Image 1: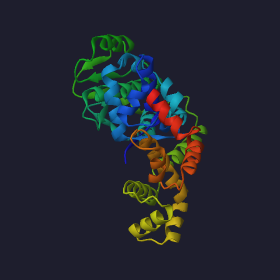
Image 2: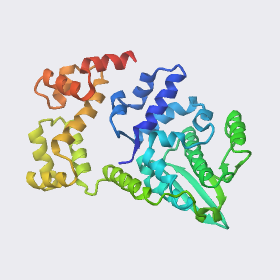
Image 3: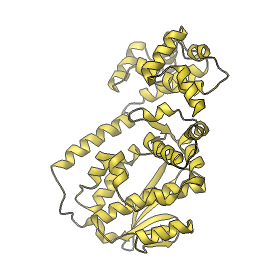
Image 4: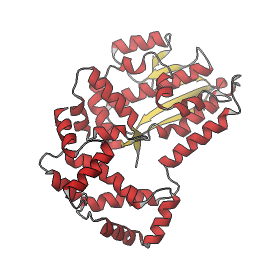
Length: 336
């Protein structure tokens, strides 16, 4: 399942609130629980990510997203990735690192590097069909790439946009890029291909393996080597939605579905550094936040749907997860 780092959602929420808008209304429209955004290394599925951007984009001041193009945001949110990209032997290697590890930021768009007629071309493609979302996402990403090209080759790079953007942003882009912006086909960044392989004199050979190791670990967590973790998460959600919330019956049903014994399933999950009970808690947290948004459900009914024998056990579980009771969470959500 494609997903995006919740840090992007946090930035959208901060900008939304800075405009004097109600952050609770934005989260409600996107179907995102505020608590989800504060889970370390949290992710938002692509569907809700696009729903969030579709509400934000028409009101976004794109100049604030791109002014002026720099790597500051990349360093603040994704320090190992930014550090690796700025410690490459060449610009080509830096771009390879960025494109390879970019799923840590998000997986619902693509950036492709092509070389033709002595020109290197970075093209941006989004899975969204919303024009405002595509424009906002492409400019943010291409401005990061422009800043990366500038890091290795100052004064190089030209931004290509398919249609005129908002006049104020167009003027600011032209000023920030010293006029290196023009109309063309698609959202692209172009520069001389010869620059790709010029050596970078400040490359730190000893540091690179350490950064690569850290990013490899993060990618392994994002994309487990085995398929069982994601299958179990999917089956837990399905059984909860079907009203089968008893953990023992749920585990038995999942084993039957996967044609595995309980011992074999637990062994596979241990190999992926997780456990059935932890996966069940993860889904319960997600579903608890979602169900509490439905004011027609009593708190006891929410706990029951999640397999808790009593309201007190559900409240204890929720407070341990989010440092507040279910009733406090629901009240704050509707109070904004």
